[in-house]
Amino acid sequence: MKPTAAALFLLAAAASAQTIDQRIDRELPSLLATYKQLHAAPELSMQEKKTSELVASRLREIGFDVTYPFGQYSEPNATCYGVVAVMKNGAGPTVLVRSDMDALPVTEQTNLPYVSQSSGVMHACGHDIHMTTLLGTAKLLSELKSQWHGTLMLIGQPAEEVVKGADAMLRGGIYEKFGRPDFAIALHDNANMPAGQIGWFGGYFMASADSVNVTIRGMGGHGASPQATKDPVVMAAEFITALQTVVSRENSPLDPAVVTVGSIHGGTKRNVIPDEVQLLLTVRTYKPEVRKRVLVSIDRIARGIALAAGVPDNRAPIVEVLAGESTEATWNDPALAERLAKALTREMGANSVVKMDPLMVSEDFGRFGLEHKIPAVMLNVGAVDPARIASGERLPSLHSSQFAPVPEPTIRGGIKAMVVSALELLK
Ligand SMILES: [Zn+2]
Ligand SMILES: [Zn+2]
Image (cartoon, rainbow, N blue to C red; front, side, top):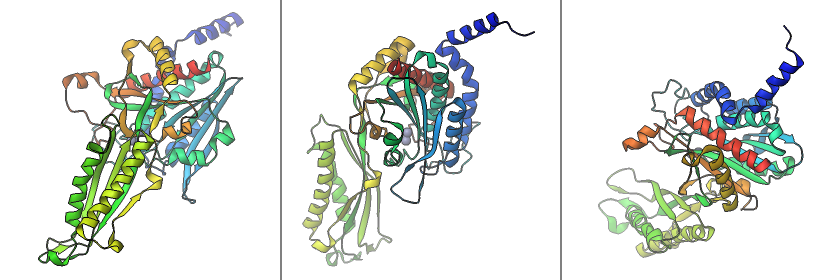
């Protein structure tokens, strides 16, 4: 029997009356399958070929105008697997929604049925959650076109973990080619908050990151004749101790800063004083002036210790700030953060939306804001079983081999938050 025109009209009306929750319910089984597929097949930064192909092809199926691969690394021969998906829907603002796509060199130690099949590589930061959320958000917003006006610009960003992907997409001319967005939003999962709960914050939300390599150079020799050497092991020990004063004595207690020596290598044998010791540092701050001062202090302290030890000028320490591995702090535009928090609280309920503390981890999402010129906000979505939080057990952090987000409530909360945020900005 052929449906009558009236029946078709009723069906269409019923479809358009579906709530966001009902639409998420309907999409969730296939999105969970996609999530598990992505989780099982992680790819490292700058190698996200299959992952980005999946994101690009799904967005194209949903009806977005997709450009892929997009972006340009400073390394001329590296392919940037960025995805740009645009949907124009009349006059109105442009909203950029970004997901990252890369995984980490971590050997997964969960017992999940969809555990990583790529040895030594794991989605330990939840970027698979972000991609699945982006696809769900894309699907819902494509169905809800009658409720918004403007342009959606969805981004699949590679190489977040090495803070190169956002730069590469900007270097590739994303705003020149596709227009400059009026707002930029993104979401990161959170390893301490209950699954599906949304966290927001206005102001500096995530820290800047600088990778600093320090080579303390001495003059090696026999371990039994230290007087004939300049011992870089002793100098390295002094250097690490002295570094502790950068935050505790030189910096205002009201300005967050972290200096961590994560790696130290020197020497080969107990009775040989080596020529040099190498240290790998990470530096985290919020304010640009604090960042600058901390980096200057590290250099000054290294030089001062060498000077005190009598190391000649031509063996002075080498302090390098790695240009390609640094990123500025993530600034959440306070007015935009408040606006989204209000809309999210209205649509999701006060218990599901909380103001959270800022974080000292780093992100390159802030780059899309062009140094605060484009209002940008990164939200968090909790990914942890509330019972585990209540138990007080030590929870695996992001980047842990045991980090295992609870998929359904996390993805559900993520999609709702991004759909509500986009509708708020495009209404
Ligand atoms: Zn990460
Ligand atoms: Zn991440």
